[in-house]
Length: 251
Image (cartoon, rainbow, N blue to C red; front, side, top):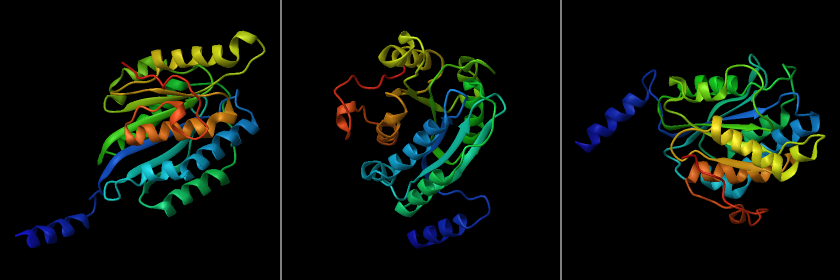
């Protein structure tokens, strides 16, 4: 009987439309609005590539070979400016991770609206995740260095049916500005509060923080491990971390 079932399952797996197992679909949205200059763009893109190649992140990605992660990456800025830079890819082995990292490092910045449309980015991520119906979990991860200033309000999209089965996490990049109060820890705390109030959603949703674009790689590594392992990590738990509070959970 077991042999018959094995043959049936093998036959079904070859049918058109049959989908492989997927424990989590992870869509990563990177902020490329006008507040992000050319060097910061590269720190973000290359930082994600480097984070994916870290041994501890690879171990988390490849922890369940028979139930892989599926990953895609897109850029976002204005209401009508979202660009996929890495289409959906099952992460089945180290070669797949290396290929994704290579694609990110080879990506050049395109032209686009300089405004910041977080709500539109959330809607674009939701549309991408809708195609991953075979995945057990769906996670949208949005990096950003400022609040939304155009397009649909983030909390309206967050609370809509479009994201009803999606967990939204945030990677907040400490903003810089001419006024001292907008820089450093104060600016980071304010932006984290904004993401927690208007952007993140779902069970266990959280924000991670980068102390500027130079810290993006470390923050991305922390965030990826937490998303993939479901562990509550402090910044001290990973290389380059400091003794700070853990990233906050969304209640």
